[in-house]
Each structure stands twice: as structure tokens, then as C-alpha cells.
Amino acid sequence: MPKSCNIILVVGARPNFIKIAPLVIELENEGLNVELVHTGQHWDEKLSNQIFEDLNLREPDIHLETPQGTMNSQLGFMIQKFDFHFTNSDNDTIVGVVGDVTSTLAAAISAKNTGKFVFHIESGLRSHNLGMPEERNRIMVDQISDICFAPSKDAVQNLLNENVDKERISFVGNIMMDSLFKNIKKIELAYEKIIPVYGIERDFFITTLHRDENIHKDNLKEIFTALNEFSDNYDIILPAHPRLKKFVESESINIGKINFIDSLPYIEFLSLVMNAKVCLTDSGGLQEETSVLGVPCLTLREETERPITVELGTNTVVGTKKEDIIKSIKLLLKAGDYNKMKADLWDGNTSSRIVKELMERVNGKI
Image (cartoon, rainbow, N blue to C red; front, side, top):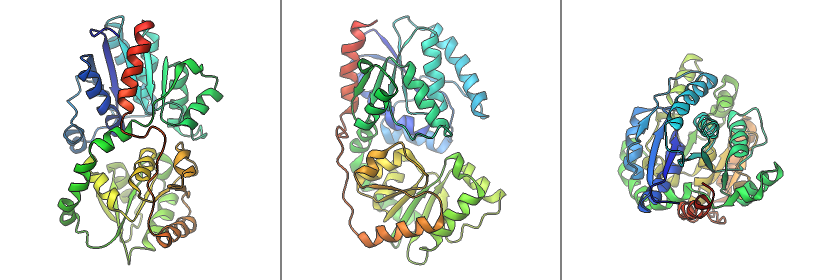
């Protein structure tokens, strides 16, 4: 890859920043010209301002300022914006997308339609539930990407099963671990500072809920009822997205003794996760982070696109029925200590492997 080659990296939601930060740093350390584009698909001012400091990531070069709206309206807006931007970029520009949000799909489609070389980080993850927009996004992006950077061996197999040419597939490991390992000392040290902020005086559970299928009255009632079964002996901390708070208030859902707090910055949040007795979540990335941190995780969904965490025994998919959640929590509490997961290439060096492969592959292809 020539040193003057432009690389456009696209982010649109908080997990994208966590995954892209180490890659930006690695590419720029190689002297490459990187343009960071933030679509604004998800925007929380408090989180957005803090995430750059937490990850030692510079500010994006471009903000598309995508308005809030339906998935289709956001997709259409971003495709138009990217079409103009990519059309006016250098012919040898390559575009990198990450994850499975609407921004990922919009950038990949626009890039290919303007003749750009596209690589996708976190390729091959599959929940096999096409009802999830994230699943549809993953499949479409993988099919049109020139390089599919896979985080795990099952992801590689998923791509092969979908007839993705093996020459387009590269198993590089989990880039989220690059950010986690790089910041692990800060995460460890942050806990003593945040204990008084949240009044933590006993063992606690940490919970996150953000997926559309769980922002539902019946599901939330089941989940909250299950959590409150343990609230006499444990604090239940739930960093709540404004959308979840608004829904709970509008539907008058009883949260019992659950401690709803504002969404937390990356370092503070993982510090709480690291010290939690149990983590309950519908987040894909958190299933991976808890597995590496050695925190037992219960996934509040019917399936997961991270089956490696289940296979290696660090995560259990429990659904949203209160009886199943209560039973699973009791089993975890009875089991006691929990082992940390050791997965192939989840070693904090994924971004360097991606850069090495880009420099080898792209040099000979564009």
C-alpha cells in the first residue's frame, strides 16, 4: 500500500469507536492517511465526548449528522451523503467498515457503488435470526466486501457456508480486545473512584438492555421481575439508554429496586462490569468482554452471534422468561469463581494483523 493511499474508516455507534480506535492508531503509526467519518447514527453527547479521551482516539474528520428516524430513512440519508463523499475522493481510496449497524451497511453499499475497495471488520458473525436488522446488515456487508476480517473460527466457517470466496476471508481475531487490553489498567483503577459515586457497598449485578426486541413491555416486566428476586441481597445496576428510560416511564413499568443510572463512559462502565457478580445483557460485544474479564454473563436473547462464548462456557443464552433468568442466576451464584476465556487471536494484536494484511493485499489489487 503506498503511503499516500487514503483510508476512510466509518463509525456510527459507540461499539464502532471501541473497535476502530486501535486500528486508527496503528494505521497512522504506519504513516498512512486516515480519514475518520462519524455518521452520527447514535449520538449521546456525554458518551461521545468522553469516548475519545477513554480510547485515546482523535476526533472524527467528518460528521455526517444523520438525523434520528427510521432505519430506512437513516440508511437513505447516509447513502446519499457517502455517495457524494466517495465520488469526490481519490480513486485509490479504500473504505473500512466495522460491525453491523446501519452506518456499516450504508458505507459499504456506497463505497462499492463508487468503485471503492471495501474491508469489513468483525465479519462472519451470525445469529441466524433474520428478524434482527443487525443480522441482515452483517450478511449484506460480508457479501460485497473485498476483505472479510473475521474475529473467530466459527465466523470464518459461516462465511464459507455462504459461499464467500476463501481468498476474501482473513481470520485476524477480535479487535475489541485490542481496546480492552490497552485500557485494562485504567479500567482496574477506575473502580475505587466510582464506588462512592454509585454508593456501591455490596455485591451487585450489572445489566444492559438496548435491542428493539427487548424494549417491549412484556419482556421488560419478565426481566425486571427476575432481577428483583435478588435485590434484597444484591444491588442491581442498569446503565439505561434514554430510549429505555423513556419507554419504561411511558409504559409505567415497575422497576422495583433496580438502580437506573445514566449511560456510562467506556472506562467507567467496564470497571463496573469487571467487578460485577453477574452481567445480564442483550449486547453482543459485552458477551465477549465479560468472557475475557472472567465475569459470568447471561444473554437476554433467544440466540447469539457470539457462540464461541457459549461453547467455551463463559456465557449462557437464557432468553427473557423470568423463571429461566432466575434459575440461571442461582446456578451462577452457586458456582462461585469463574474462569476467563482464552480464545484464538483474542490477544490485543488484531489491529496490527489487519494493517499487515491490508498492506500486503491492497498493494497488489489497486
